[in-house]
Length: 296
Image (cartoon, rainbow, N blue to C red; front, side, top):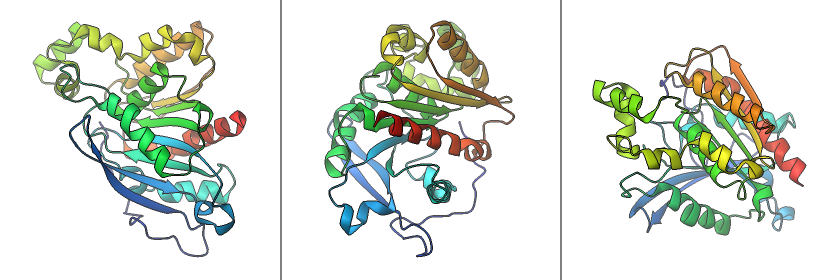
């Protein structure tokens, strides 16, 4: 659900930035998943200090980044994200934490209604534990955050709202928050709309109402309201989002307001494009960084 207006390629995996700048690096690898019965690729951005000889015992916070539909684990770093992160660190606007981007394909980062693709189970039971064993990551929810754009924004909100005991903060840009009823979405699938075609493999065709409700960020926010009071929450959306996700963002904002759940919400000029995401990505990174600092 991201219109691909790619910026020039700015990163090659595991190649260091020039010595004049911080020597952060990206490691890309793959995990053979027992739950998914397939290989899942991922990339990890390590801050420069991670490899410093005098900091080998130091442990770090981790931000899990979930990509948009049609993108992959490299998108954040291949479209200007790496340089943006480096600039923010050079300006001392964000701290040193790992950013981990897994491959999500078209899963919406949830288990599918038919049970054939158990992505949420994979992420929680296999992926996070594997990453947090492999890298020097500080244990506990206070050192763990999740973020995403579009499909990944929905996935980030859904994961954090379903499991506020696992995450200290969540951020989302143009999250795929749909206010249409399952019946209206069924009609969209029958008419062949873009969103309708994408929902069927994950949520059922027709929509499995129980499954839809179980994964709704709106309903999860109500169900886990007490946990959300301990969660730092940020989301934004463009005023002219081609998929109408600004309606969902506004609805979530109103709901959280009514429930007295602290959050930060912005409706900005812009559409549902990579240009929009890059323009406001820094805000999400700074928000999560501040949340990590406050948890300490």
